[in-house]
Amino acid sequence: MFIALSMSVDAYSQFDFKKALGGASKAVQAITLTDGQVRNYVKEYIDTMDLQNKVCADTSAYAIRLKKLTQGLDEVDGIPLNFKVYEVTDVNAFACADGSVRVFSALMDIMTDDELLGVIGHEIGHVALRHSRNSFKTALLTSALKDGLASNGGAMAKLTESQIGKVTESLINSRYSRKQETEADDYGYAFLKQKGKNPWAMSLSFRKLKSLQEDAGANNINIINQLFSTHPNLDSRIKRMERQAKSDGFEMPKQ
Ligand SMILES: [Zn+2]
Image 1 (cartoon, rainbow, N blue to C red):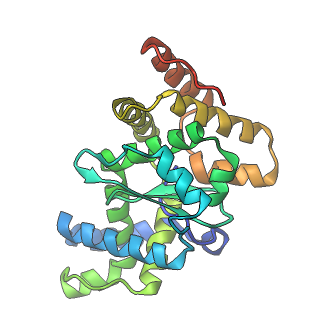
Image 2: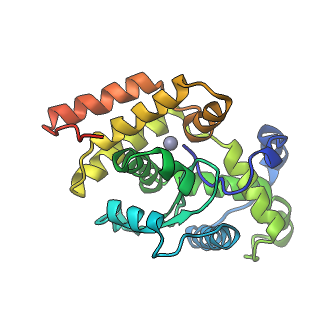
């Protein structure tokens, strides 16, 4: 799974990431962004996402359910975590480098608590391993800030709506490597275990994705592509995570 997808994918399907990257390569070499600057942009980005999407009220059934299942997941590797539900029809979830985790209501509709926890654990793995920060930084440098930063020598500027859109385009088109995905699985497993959750969640969420994949309606294919398109083979991920849970002595929770 990758980051941010709160806007319609179709609107961005024509975006050519490779071309953008090629065009930006010169500018990228010339630009440096400090960690603090990247943090500010991430904050601005997630604040905008939260404004553009319908965030479920704390009293809604979705928010109450998410709060309950993420209880105790307060921080990861020094990064404080916060969770919100977007009430939207897209099936997705994403985590931002600042520890903001956003789960879409449509995903909650089709997943059990354990399955959701597996997805969340994996996403948090990308945050902890700084995959999220690095891909966000790349998205900034290759799209939104490409011209602006090159011309003003790197001064911070508030992102415009169109720049936010460009960052989202880049994030949608960027992919983590297989190695990063495997690392995020391992991190998610260890994280859930450390926080007192049953790490069977990891393999259960992959099982659900596999069953969605097999039930190959166009809609489901879309879900798979969005959530886990370039990830390692689901069967091997299920096996790896199951083997680990069994060897750690965990019982598989009833679904
Ligand atoms: Zn992933």
